[in-house]
Image (cartoon, rainbow, N blue to C red; front, side, top):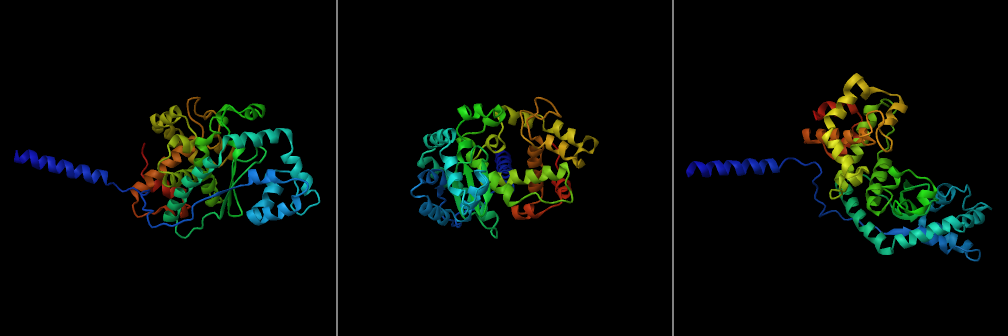
Length: 342
């Protein structure tokens, strides 16, 4: 009995130590204070404009939304006009009074209640708290805005503002998506469930823009996006990978089951160091599958593998913080020190 008890104690100790394995994404946010995120609804405010109040209301909108309003008018709704141009009134009214856009506005209002947007703000507040814990010296966005873009933009991050085009999340069967002939692989993720992860990923891509001109090869893109998705793991710990990557459950399982084979494909013939952007895009852009590998291979497979490499790197280098990771520009160093072997 004495030996059995010793064995049991040893087993419990090993099990405890195993479960206490270093987790770089485990962070305490109890002492992190951030203002609760409240989305300003430009999609609603824009509809309040009419010929009798546009002068005074436009001034109020510029004050409320700061420089983002001017960017919205000149770039996002893509009518070319500026707030101070003589064509401003006509530009705005042609957008909000367009028959199809007016219908789309109604779809947005019926799909997204104020409570939906409040809940989104609460979820995003938690992500921002975790961001502040990981990146203490970095600034967070100053405002969060919902808007309509004429089906041009999902998420934008400009002038310290995160903006979300709500008409891009009306559900895959929305009639406008069929009318605009959006492909099925794209509309499948154009719904409320994917909104939070799209916002966080879009924010992170803008925050850590891949602007290194020295090593513009496949490995560089793979590691960059791997870092982005790894940070998203840290900011959205309760969000399923299928939402973060925009995969179906079947696609996600395919990645896991074939990880070794997919990695072998890239290692062969030094594909990792190919700097032909056309080839790079085959493995990093969206689609029904990765054509260069097989019809069963999920799209953007280089991004998923990149996340796996980065995850291995962080697990094997316990002193590296998330901030250190994002500041490390040497993709080959990350790969080498990751000890990645699927």
